[in-house]
Amino acid sequence: QDTTFTAQIDIVNSGQCGDNLYWTIANNTLVISGSGDMYDYTTSSLPEWYLSNEKITKLIINDGITHIGDSAFAGCENIQKDLILPNSLQTIGDYAFQNCKNITSISFGTDLKSIGDYAFAGCIRIDNMTCPTTRTPDVTIHTFDMVSRYAYLYVLQSYERTFKIDPYWGVFDIKTIVEETDLADLQVQSCKIVKFIKNGRLLIERNGILYNARGARVK
Image 1 (cartoon, one colour):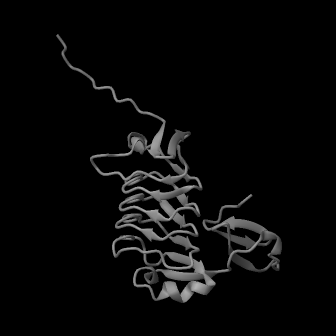
Image 2 (image 1 turned 120 degrees about the vertical axis):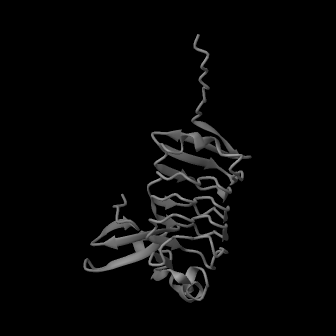
Image 3 (image 1 turned 90 degrees about the vertical axis):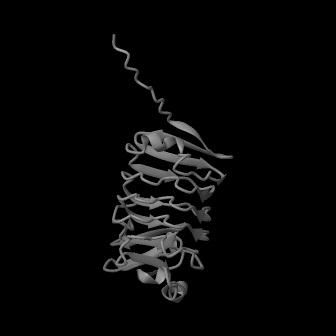
């Protein structure tokens, strides 16, 4: 008689991840929405979406979140390309994005104050970051472990020196961008390429067409 038992694991597609934060997964996209701080997680207390982490290829974090929890997205290796973080975000927890190996671009928000230990460690494909803050967010010596020091770091013109003299941010290839401006006020010749910040995001205008930091056209 066959006495083999198969454990059934129920994979859920939505839930709560903070007192006022909620998550959903649809079409391989994980969406975080609501307001306030996300819960912190550990290897013994993983987020509910962890059972689906191999299927997650896109992460959307909506404005309103103020803290990304410890280990929240660690090991989500299939999150692709651009990671755009909202202006409301103030802190990123330890190990939050550790080993998210397919993220290539990060746009931090304007209110970011600190990034935790090993938060982006092992994100080996990051080649550019945008940090439009008016001070250098607090980081540790291990925050960006294994991130290429040849990665571009775009900062506001007025704060270029602040970032360059910082022992942790200053290791990257720092580029300056035009401070926040309305699209209607931006007039450029067709031969020019202009980088600027709009609502906390790096945009590039080339021949009258807007692109994001990865070169994808912005509608």
